[in-house]
Length: 169
Image (cartoon, rainbow, N blue to C red):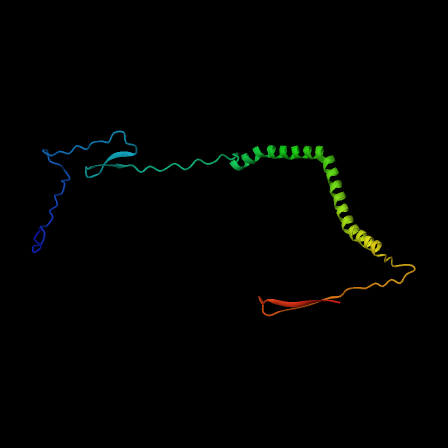
């Protein structure tokens, strides 16, 4: 374990001499094959190797007459869409007689439903008169009676239980 009672020893730096002596001559090794690395001799005689700062070339500008990609895509899709619309039109022209017949059939079915809704109550009323003998005109004394139905329903509160009665008179 280190003894912390004494201060640590000072750090001694050994500077590299600017002009190397004959016994310790430093020969700079030129980097070979590395792009953008150059060696430069400074005015004081040192040789420094590092990355050369070369200005980056500007991005190539689009030529004045170039067409954007979206315009090319649209131009390629336009005939396809136009052909689809034309094919749909031709198909509708062939299907038009059948579509007209189907619309007439739908109108006829709707008219039949309306006529049925109106005719059934009339037929039932006529059948009821024929069975009971009430014709409403002519010789006998015909008494028409109507039934009155009244409802009295009460409930307390929003979700309260409803109570009531129905009276037939």
